[in-house]
Image (cartoon, rainbow, N blue to C red):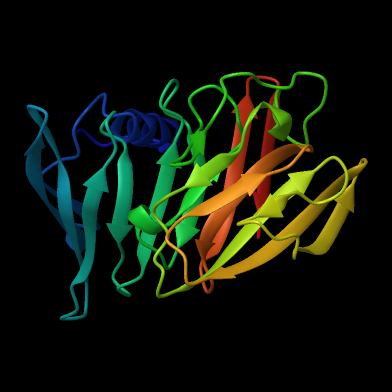
Length: 239
């Protein structure tokens, strides 16, 4: 690519993120005729598309190599899991309709985490029994889910790990794996946020008669952020 100004750099980064243009194989930053750092990219072929596999950064003045590796892509070729130079896995879950990021987990693998806000395309690894959504209220976004329509489940939990389940309810807490054992950790606008601790099970099910929203499931020790955005609204939450 030619030398770009700041706005052009932001536009280029956006196009690369959306897989509209490719990341260069090799790039350098030159200041006063000297290379200040360099980046080498390697690719893999997925669904007949050349997608980034590994990025190696060579900082000037050191012999270190900072390696950023892409471990997995989702069905829309969005990055789903990557590993940074520190060896920590980062999981990004995307809305499969508009490809926007809906959740990021740090220190976890993609098969062991799940999140849903019940928005269209944002199931995030959670099986939702009914297609019916609740439009009368929500803690974020446009919709929520009434558990009277059916339970929701996640079947990818690692039974050797302790799990944290966090959700918002419009009233009393729902049941998680048959027990009502959550701890209330926040209250906002009539909604209650509950956190549950689950261990020894590969299946996590949530049932009851409540309206719920913003459900996250991950191993203990994982950090989590969720995102919801529209042209006129943007929301970020972290746990």
